[in-house]
Length: 94
Image (cartoon, rainbow, N blue to C red; front, side, top):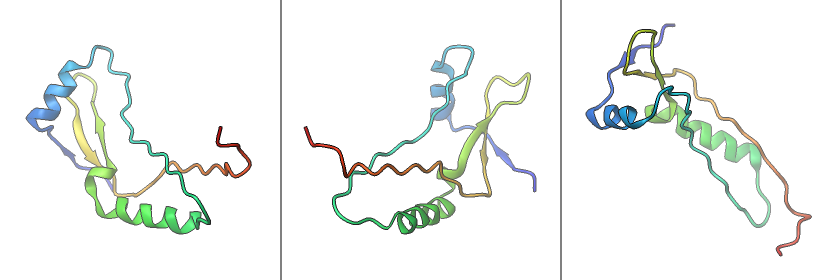
């Protein structure tokens, strides 16, 4: 299935124009969650994937074909997460 592209909003286009050439920057959302007590990592990951699958903006990336100055927004049909879990239980709080 081919992804469909959408023009940027005026606000997105302005932010894009502020980025210096070459546009090698990648914008990603990262989160660090500190949990005290037991955590079901698989359940949390599954819940986050469910939210990503329902929200187009969380699956949106930008593609700029050669010769085009302003990219298109492309919404991925697949929900994916770069997931990393680190157990810090043995670390001191200081």
